[in-house]
Image (tube, rainbow, N blue to C red; front, side, top):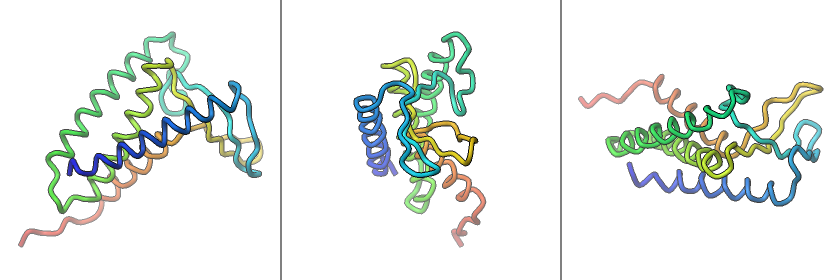
Length: 155
């Protein structure tokens, strides 16, 4: 299933290209309303999902870099072991891998993750996110679906 690494590469390229674009066009925390429930905004996250640990003094950067690199190695090894009948698992792993590498690149080079997609309802804003986060979420959903669906028996 290593042939599915093209999915990871596609996610990585889209993620980095959109982050470069938003940083070229927007000032930090500048916002542009696109739809009545969606803004583009240049935001930075030094923590994890939902800014978890974002105000922890800096140690979290190296922790999340190490964790993402470890997870990436595990995902590649897992992909190597998959059979041809485990395509959904492969897609899920490849999406998570691409997203993890996209965000770890930001942490290494910038010290934070660039987020720019801001969905909201009235005064409630979902935490801003990026293409890497979308890929990770979709990959995890695929893995969960795959985990709940019955396996075909080899009989």
